[in-house]
Amino acid sequence: MSGLRTVPGVTIDELVAAARGGSPRATGRLLSYVESGRRDEVLAALGRVTPARVVGITGPPGAGKSTTVGALVGAYRAGGKRVAVLAVDPSSPYSGGALLGDRIRMAAHINDPDVLIRSVAARGHLGGLAAAVPASITLLSALGYDLVILETVGVGQSEIEIAAVADPTVVVLNPGAGDAVQAAKAGLLEVADIVAVNKADREGADQTVRDLRAETSAPIVKLIAAQGEGIAELLDVIEASHRSDDPQRRVARARAQILSLAQTLLRQHADLDRLAESVAEGVADPYSAAARLIAGER
Image (cartoon, rainbow, N blue to C red):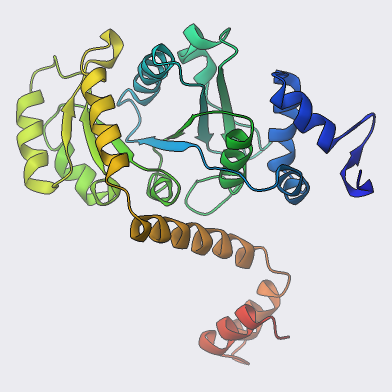
């Protein structure tokens, strides 16, 4: 085995074999590696991987995303699917750790060996989507998960990048005056393949659906996720969206992923501060500095 893959007591190849054999500890260790500088080693150990289905769930705070995810996990498990949930959280400015208690919200699935639930800290990645998420999805695909549900915390513009990796992207909203308009202003409806109006037993649900139909051509589903109502219809719409996927959409998602991750790399570039100082001092202009940054010129 390659020396590069050796870690104290166990190699990455051995971890992959153990994870494929059902070891949750090995899976957790590998996911930690793809969130760190050892990402490339893990990906090299996996070889060619058939991608799992990825369903994105996003929307504003309080919309019921985690409740919807929990209901979806139950429905997919009833169909015999192995499911992984990646909940992308904002990083703590102190520890870099993931903050949300998604495991608590989806406690019904904690002891199911065919369900993995993991919070992933965004770690400063522009837009909020953790840079490790694409690699995590590749790893989970290689470990035999049929479906990855990707949930964003719904803060700022973190929702937008989910469309780069998910098919489809489901935007969860609540009934309420102006919610559809606010979602449109925030750019949420631009990435929505499906819109789910959760808590549809509340007053104003039908009006919210009417408002949304004026703002988006995406299918709209009414849910009461806490009671499981509307989940079967949502599954049908998700499946229909997946069947309509085509090479052009896949290339567009891949392009968005590349650009997003490239932007992160540029923000971490060793020459960025030096070039910024030269622009601030009037020695260089931002156009030539940007070109030099991309070209790697000093």
